[in-house]
Length: 233
Picture 1 (cartoon, rainbow, N blue to C red):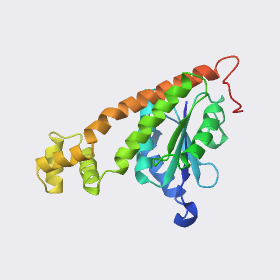
Picture 2 (tube, rainbow, N blue to C red):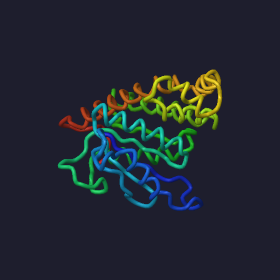
Picture 3 (cartoon, rainbow, N blue to C red):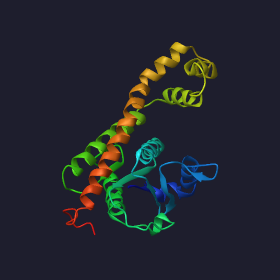
Picture 4 (cartoon, helix red, strand yellow):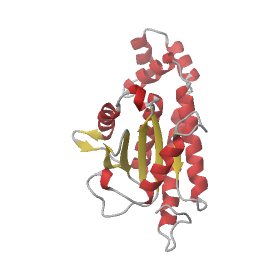
């Protein structure tokens, strides 16, 4: 399965931002009082300024993970750790009480994400065995690239992207976006090109497929009689 462990950056100077984050995450992972497809255990505060949630090992879980990671990286105030692989069953009702290799890896991943090696604070950790390690590394590289694209997007670019998303269900969404923003359709198109919006939209499904593949590879290692070749537990 897919575990997201998220830690607040600069909490001593910014105050406790976990409560509003949990409210946002609830808004993204529930609909009509029910969990959206892909959510297994809801996000909760675990310790200090960290929150944690468990997502499914299917297409819905991987797609939801990519969406949440994109939102967290856009916010800029969080380090994101992604752990993949087996979890211990039966599952408890609370993510705080859950355990397993995927949870251990998510903890290692968030510590890696806090490091200074990348300007995009996300890491994906699976077992060191191949091909699981390479797939996890590939997933991390693509998620960091998507985060870097978003981080360099201008306010005008975000305005166009967000307004277009609001009109995704109507005919001629770019025309509706232009009308809302009071600019020409050509101006909207230019903003979207500069924002690399089409490229991001094309890459997000690939990130989801890679994340699911990373989880499948990690779970295959975890399910072997000898287990992974590390000292995680």
